[in-house]
Amino acid sequence: MILTDLNFFSETLGMRCTLGVILPQRTLAEAQGKSKPQYRTLFLFHGHSDDQTAWQRWTSIERYVEGLNLAVVMPSVHLSFYTDMVHGGKYWQFISEEVPAIARDVYPLSPARADNFVAGLSMGGYGAFKLALTHPERFAAAASLSGAVDIREVVTAHPEDPLNASWLDGMCNIFGDLSKVPGSQHDLFTLAEKVAKGKVQPKLYQCCGTEDFLYADNLRFRDFVQKLPLDLTYEEGPGEHEWGFWDRMIQKVLAWLPK
Image (cartoon, rainbow, N blue to C red; front, side, top):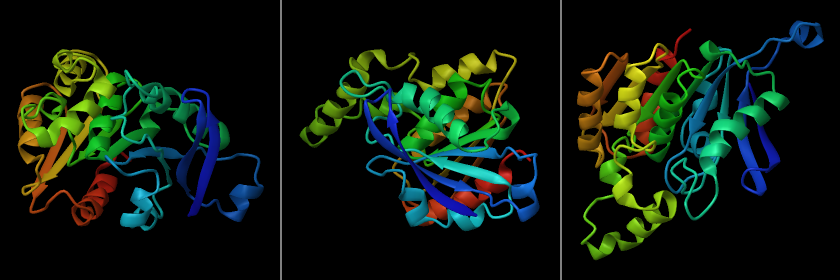
């Protein structure tokens, strides 16, 4: 495997950004040949407070993708919830348009829908489902690990609690009027219902630890999606909101991805 960082100037964000990238290593014959293979790609998203290095630092993702002929692209979106912030950067445009374009321009990545997948943990699980459900024509599959899949609960949790004041301020900076989030383009329940009525639908994988503080949110989303004509694989088991659980489950995600 080849492990590299791609540092570039983002026109969308107006600053330099870095992608962590894992690539299959070509054989000598492939490297010398005229025909260059295009790789299947997993866009892998980090959680709240992390960055593009998190998956490489806290899991063995490089070892897990060995032999899968799969590239992994890991961007950083800071605390944006993979959203064009009302007060901040346009991270939705960054993640949905600029990152794929830049990565495919530099590396031999296939643009075909059947070869593109997205996954993430916590905030990144929300981002992964949001991207695949907004653009089902681009992604064959999406996976959420302990995802913040019920954004309606995330942005409205106990506003009377003074300990949540800074969290809610951050949510307002991202989404603006929080009362308008339910039913909007940010709401995974709304997006799933819309995709279920369409002709093109990504496969979905969802998992969460039974001791995770987002467990109830994940059950609500699972129960909602299971009533729709969507292909959802759901798994749960003992685990909290921590890297030991995600290190185990990303291996199951990789095994689940369409071949």
